[in-house]
Length: 82
Image (cartoon, rainbow, N blue to C red):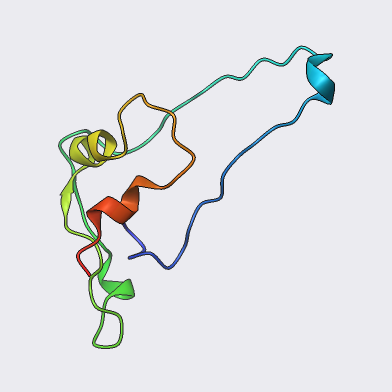
């Protein structure tokens, strides 16, 4: 949302030798306060690049991304304005 779709994250996937090797993943989350309002930064929005995402609180963005559901497809497409 902050980059108005200019910068995209990639899907992280690990393949471990036919499950012969034990793997442990540790998830750590970081972000602004849950009530912080986020929207596309003004440096990524202009006449040629219209705003593509609605502004919302960080908590709303987490909920829109499925909360604790694991999904390899981006939920940001559901939030697009255009």
